[in-house]
Length: 270
Image (cartoon, rainbow, N blue to C red; front, side):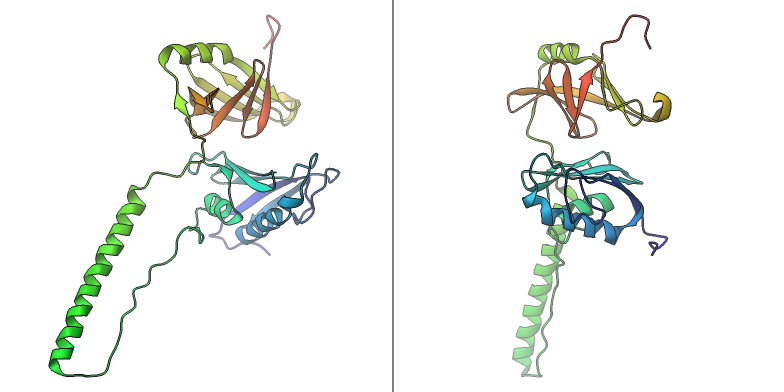
């Protein structure tokens, strides 16, 4: 059954998961689903959360979700769902619930975070004029209080900082930042000739991410910038897309859970 025309659909790749996300095994082949409507996506997220506590190494269940807004990855780590977003509109990463993941991907209201405010009135039978005046006064007080409450809530919603699931970090000063960017500058790759990815980091803090298709031809490119920082006393790069590049060692960096290895090319190579 197809989704309504005004509802987005998603392309989903399942790794170490059955097509219904209710079974997780390392020997399961990768499954690709196209045209998945929102309700079906939510069912898959709930099913994945249901089996997360029973997952053990080397099983590594993963959903890769492509939407009009970007790419999202849902993984199981330590018995919990972990979510990373490649969408600059809704950046996020970390441990979350299926409802929070679904809300972040679709942009719909998260029922776990927001509850409707209901203002109920009271009715009573006719009474003496003095009693009516008292009731009218109390009604006015209640309405004023309700208006103040609603306005305060609206101001808080508008003024609250945008959600980010980046870890706590501290930006480096100019000199250590320059040293770090100089040391990590270069090209890093992961995967094979088809479906592989390249991460090119420049000393100036500019980054180019490339995804390759058949015959090593680029099919997708993203440009962003990074700033040198410390996360838990370890060097890292904070991107302009509200994500983090972890510096694993002198030849490895990690982006969105994927490890990229430094590429050392011969002189004259492309």
